[in-house]
Length: 337
Image (cartoon, rainbow, N blue to C red; front, side):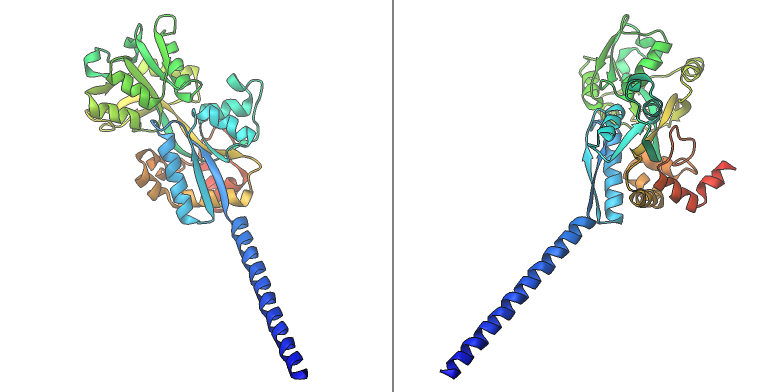
């Protein structure tokens, strides 16, 4: 009897050890899972429609950051562009957003569409590429200068996008309005299709070059970029000092055998001021150290390799984390001299 009780006691003791060990193992696994969950940072970046440059640029940023730090995952969100991204940053539905410099300036200073809801906490990590004004028409359209667009049916870009704003600014300076011409809101991809099908006479893009929708159009049917005269460009910039003169390099689009003078503005990677400073510091570091890879992923990002482009002459303030990185590298002091 005593022997039997001894055996039972040993059995219960062993069972308790096993169960206890299982309990501890389960708790350890749960803690490890929670630690991994806590370390994984899932962010969303706002871009624009897939026919432009912001979407593939957003994908390039996501890829570079994810490869450099597997604990950061960046989801891509298509949007109507800069203004939509500012509003989404403001309401917290995205964490990073690609924003044209003029829209960022307007948001911080409470002008234009942001007159009644300024966003002073909008900050920048880096400038990534310039948005350039691209007007494209078919070769058989008989249209060769932007001022020839009067009286035609024009794709000016998505509603409330920086593409639409730049189109109306340039056209208005040249006396072309919705009273003497037809303005059509459209995506860059769908608008390019309409030019191909002759339901639009020309399409405007205002983003990094080459613009994928316009490149596909030029590959499909003979097309060309429309020109501004020097005096027209000076008038546009005089009235809108956040723009600057630039060129669309020869060979950007099929059949383009010369540089085309135009105007542009920097496209920025923006965040809210309250985004974690150390996280922003790391993102800034990854982007800066991977400039060569960025330009290999998309031609527009080649500008990041230009000295000072990412952090110099910005229309709004750097985020504290980005500023700390550039200062530690001695870059801000170097370019302020």
